[in-house]
Length: 475
Image (cartoon, rainbow, N blue to C red; front, side, top):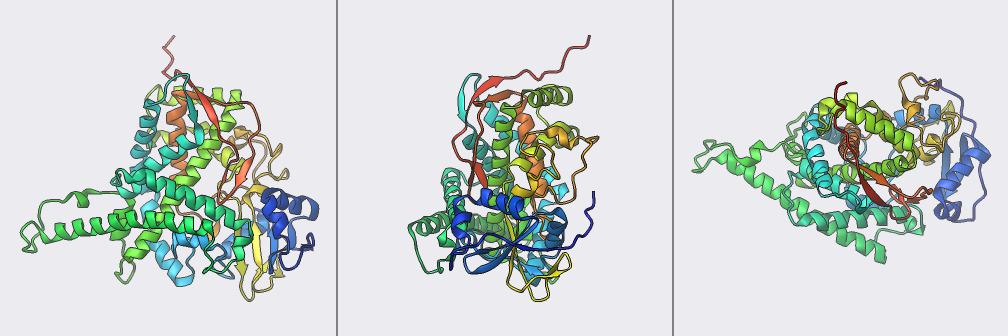
């Protein structure tokens, strides 16, 4: 449902302490602080993060306008030294013509047609995990989801040729996520790049592990491609098809991409885009799945409806990409889990000279923030906002959701490139696992831990219960 443009009338928020502003209150409880800004002050609130002037917006109409203008009168906020060490100047952080060039090269690798070709790998990785589960066994839900999504991303991104390095790479990415999250809500956000705190040294060591393996894969892929072009005798005649030429993974596509002038991405650029896709495809989806299973364990009716859908659609076989559109309840569970616990919970943009929002002038340099956490839990758009209700996404649901009241993948020209990949991956993995097992968890509320993503603050240990999703015999 379109949201009409509405005037912006900012009000002054809570007073801060110079020179930190509201940093201490924000860092102590980011989600609670932003929720109080919305509830106590309104849809547009000025505040300060350190010395920087900030504006927090909560209305979907303002959010839509902001995200649509991020390549016009707003730009990316380079606020985290730690995040830049991981992604480099990838499409996530690049600007202007550089961003447009990189997006045009990366986008084809994750278009729906390409995602379709990765679906079998998604399901096979989930089946392999479920084959190792046993009725009555106990599992760490977050760890199991992370292992599955890491297998998927390594297979679709790198062709599954990282071997024994998979564990070390996973550990390195975990360190990176923790350090970035801690920096975003603490005083480290304002430290100059040359300061090497213990956490920053840990991050650099983790990035070195990631870089070493990714650059090895790039060099290997380039060497194989060159050998295939030269032929077996070095005569320049193409030889038999080389295994590298048969690959259809994301890394191969990134290396083969060319811009309008015929220029490829440099090895460093390929590394940056590959690691960005890896982080997005692994951590965000495993987090969404973890929350989905936690929510289902406390919602027996929703879980029973899921079991019935999987029985009716799949009849005991693993899902395929052709089943995706028919698994409507499965998709709604994923969507509702991402409403309640959006992996990316905060989006900033910096106003350029001449920037406006809701017809009001925004001073250049102002950081404008919006939060999926506060918008997704706003009772104006979502009745009973703190309750897990996948039925709110039914096609005939009585309450229409405004445009940009749900935006876990951002919006506008910088919408997450991997959105389709993540949604298909989450639904197919959930369907594969849930048709064989229920994950029973204690019926208790689990608080989120605020980092780069919203992870459960405590481990989730589930008991596995076997499920029979075979087709019902004809009467």
